[in-house]
Image (cartoon, rainbow, N blue to C red; front, side, top):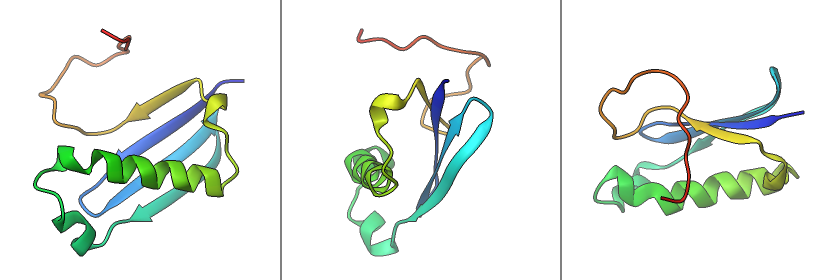
Length: 91
């Protein structure tokens, strides 16, 4: 069974959900205080802070990230792109 982590970063929160195929296993909202967000010059500088928050929450939920088949995200800094799936690799 495929497990998918969905991430939706917002201005003061990061919402995540984990699915097994189409079944939602859990979803959580990680709140970030204005003071925490204000430490960063721009949104890309928040990467490590949000990554650590997500990984900490997954650990708290006793979820092993090695079980993931895919990670998907909403939003971002890219211009509009054609819809569909994109292969992501090291290069």
